[in-house]
Image 1 (tube, one colour):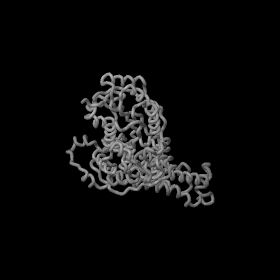
Image 2 (cartoon, one colour):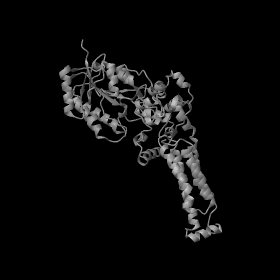
Image 3 (cartoon, helix red, strand yellow):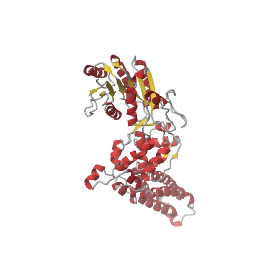
Image 4 (tube, one colour):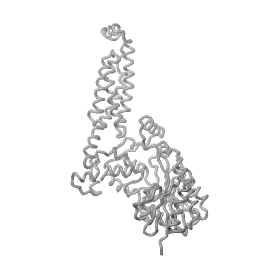
Amino acid sequence: MDRRIVLITGANGYIGRALTQRLGSAYRVIGLDRSPVEDNPDLTASYSMDLGDDASVAAALEKVRGDFGNELAACIHLAAYFDITGEPNPLYEKVNVEGSRRLITALQAFDIEQFIYASSMLVHEPKPLPGVRIDESSPLGPTWPYPQSKADAEQVLRENRGDIPVVFLRFAGVYDDEGHSAFLAEQIAGVYEHRVSAHLYPGMLCAAQSALHLEDLTKAVEQTIARRADLEGETPILVGEPETLGYAEIQDIVHCRIHGEEWTTVRIPKSVAKLGTWIEEEVLGHDGFIKQWMVDDANAHYILDISRARNLLGWEPEHSLRDTLPTIIDALKADPQDWYETNKLNTSRVAWHPKSSDAGKTEPARPQSHDTDMAHDGHQMDGDMHDMDGPQRGTRWTQFAVIGLGLWLAASPGVYDVVSADTARASVVAVTLERGLPSIEWRANALALSDMLSGIVLMIFGAMSLSKRTAWFGQWATAFIGIWLLFAPLFFWSPSAAQYLTNLLVGTLAIAFSVLVPMMPGM
């Protein structure tokens, strides 16, 4: 008996390739993507299709009909547009919503037994507390454009499906043994790099969202196709792990595995977090990962009731994020550069650590296992990571010293004796009159104001220097403030020896603690 035909849109994507590998032995899998897939042996055939164009969709499906006939066991619709900006994008409507309409309309000419739409649990309204689970009857309420486009696409498919049975598989956040989850990877990287921001969270520390291992996802799709005869009409099904980890719990697991020490996560007001993201993007010009909508959703709970998946599909997850996190961390520790590349993170943050393939060219490979990785102390890492990152962490005290110097400088005007024409030495008064300088009081107050402002700025730049992302700016800015402090008493013709000595001492130490004692940023 010939194997039945299954269509997969987005066959060249991350999930698409995993699905073709699982289904390839039982079905003839045909891939549809923006360009034909030529390097996937599990595909029977592949065709080019642009979901944003009516003619392209019709032409691709006509080729399928001409080559393989009119009968399809299922069509799995994975292709979609996605970004994390949280901003509206016309591609959401063109590809996700109207693209789904084009596809389901063109499939009306086929004898198709099932249409599977890869939706998201995020189409549901999040719960405010962790004790309440979401099931398929829970109200819909997407909170940002991507899940809104998924909800809109579901509605379009309901209106245009005709007699085709449609299953809406509402997946939780997908991950695998290497990560491959943007939000999870960013969280892990923050802990790995000891970012200050990784200690802060603008919501409930118990905020939790269900996750889904890639292998469990492909198993759910496989069982959905296998039970297609029992799934009539429109069937939404939530697919994810019933056990969830809160944000702080993930932080603790990750930090313990990487650094072998306790981790503190502090809850901060959302207004402070939003101000921080605004400064990072608008003032510093960094395209940071954290967006305003993520701060708004910091309290969102997506904990799933998967009773329907169990009853209709006979599906149960075989993996859990709790059990997989150590595997993900071990992959990071084994080859940081490769892990960062795999998860589309900035590899320059781990540029000092050689790729394992490069390291093998210069020294024999050392056997590693999970046990030996766990044996490392929290402040020790292999190879160049230890050589570079160890000294950096060993000089973090200098940035705290800069913050302390800034506090001292800002408070110092309050402890000086008031300098005036009556209390100043006769020589100071004489020089003032001879050179036509501003009054002694004005000059003393101007330098006092400069000291207060410089002290505040030093504290800000010292804090920025603690983060690897902003250290390059914070350290050099601290050094320039130090230079200003050396010349400020001369600029204002300071009448106070105490002010002069304070500026000289703080300026010298600020320069030393910013770029001389620690490693110079960018060097």
